[in-house]
Image (tube, rainbow, N blue to C red; front, side, top):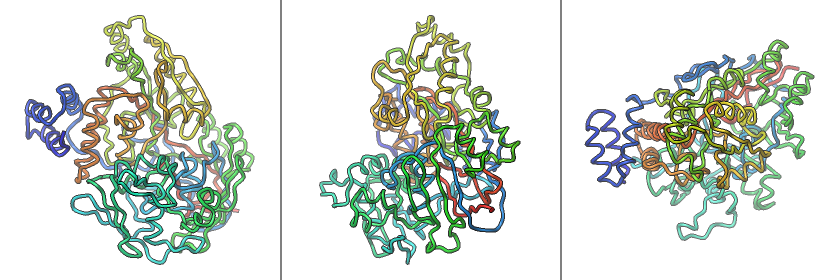
Length: 590
């Protein structure tokens, strides 16, 4: 189907410009099946007409709209003028490779990579007054988009150097992009620095961008030329977790080769790499020659200690061995607050969600999928199991996204209706299934207790779930390979501020670990990806989310508020509204 035709038809039926019958006629004539067009109409009916409220409307507290039972935590600690000190933080797992194109997981990017490397654009992270979602050019002074959305010109800030003295300029940007962008599909030979592993990690971004050329116009100007409009080119460029767009010094590769980039992390950021002891810690230090003195780091050093055992993290905090910990146990927060520690939390794009496996025949009947969804008490999980440190997810879109709207709301918990749907589908006696789940990992919160909660809920309506657990790295490998027959569902913690995120779990050729194909979904996602008007793009993404709310192959469970516990000695700590952190304003009282 022609994407512009779909955009126009959807906009027409939402605004009343065309009737539902006319929409069906246009959609089918343009190539959609009757069932796909009908599903989109149902999604339109379940979504109140109107654009989503912008992310800036979110309040400064950690309790978001669209969910109840959230505890109210501050988004920042004590503030004051000063500088210096060594900040020691305990985190839940070790870092991945310290290579900006290859590093996987929020732990790696939030700790080292975001501090040492800088991207062409970033988001505002240090605003304690609310979530603005504002895109900041960063090492780029300005970004121009062509009227047709097929070219983006970045005007680089002049005079910046990497911390090894190599100039940051248009050639360095092109070198970094060509390291992770596979040009073989365009009939070209990739340059010597091309890394197929980096290209594989970053394919989720460069593939849909349809990048054709990167042109160094002059020393401080770079133009990206695309094969078609891609509305989230800049917004998607900021995202991390599967590699990043952090710019590294080409001289390091020339001197040490690809492994040397991770061994000698060298960027333009406010911190420089100091040392790493695998499985123990990574230490970074203040960059004394940061290119923007007004935004230079106040800390002398940051030590990220690897403390995977949650009890050990809490004990280290109480003993004064660390100044803060990530992923604290919800059951300890009240005690830690009474001991004088500060718990910060904030709305962010995190989503803990399930994917159902289309290879399992019992999920083929939508009533069975609906029954399973209705059996899960997400509000109870957020309030009772997670003690208000999370909120029940109402849809698949990140709460910090411009496309997020609480008007797109999946059906509420209703176990009585779930039992009836199962009986209607011929499963009055229920059925057995298997749930793949990790024992821990980046953003996983409490995966096994949460999975047990879901299994207990489902058992009450007749769905008998057996858990199949594995450690994080093994789980990631199995998850990425897709579910095999015999597995009913698995789980992931992910999410992005960019509304492009929905392409990853919902698109038929995205990270489709459940082998599902929802008719009409790819067309709606394409419409969002290609829309030049941000409001139109948001509308298309909202409809894609609402369509999944009808079909229920991906099930949003909770949004974690990502609590962090800090000592009152930590000054100017602002809880991030994203997956990564900006520590440049932080300092530690002696």
